[in-house]
Length: 229
Image (cartoon, rainbow, N blue to C red; front, top):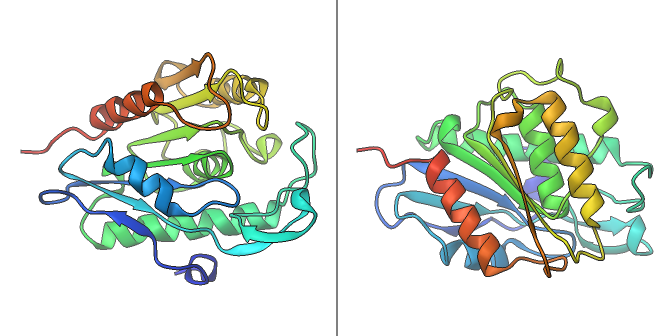
């Protein structure tokens, strides 16, 4: 596995209540850990799905005056045209692909895996899904943006051109404003099958989650990962 994930603690896991036939890999936001999202996933769990919430390695973050905190890659600024940590983003995506490979080795095929994340984790989940050769069941992208968007085009995407995407955003988000979500969904629709992309917004939600959003996530996961008899 890639060193990036190995330098952080083992992921927080919500095991399936019965035999796991599908998995959700969910990436937390900047400065957070996987534990909070593992609890959130436990609240909407589907019995045959295993939920894996890895922890980002600790690194200095330019946006936060170089303070060290859990981060999937460096963030220089949240301006739409800001310089991006291309090397860090690509390295983090390789670490996520290694996690997917690990689940495939555990017996869950990649097309039975939904990748998701919140904020920086959502950004990484989108980038990984668009650049991996692993065919995935879907992506849940919460309160986020598409990194390195100018380097991505239809020709870059190999096995996930028809992937289903649930993108969610709070209309009252002060950190990653709604326009980031709107621009991202337009870019995704230009590269993927637009009929498979759902964009949901929540009127008073800030940079966080809400019960209505969590139920939308649960329904999306159960639709993309139906029970196998």
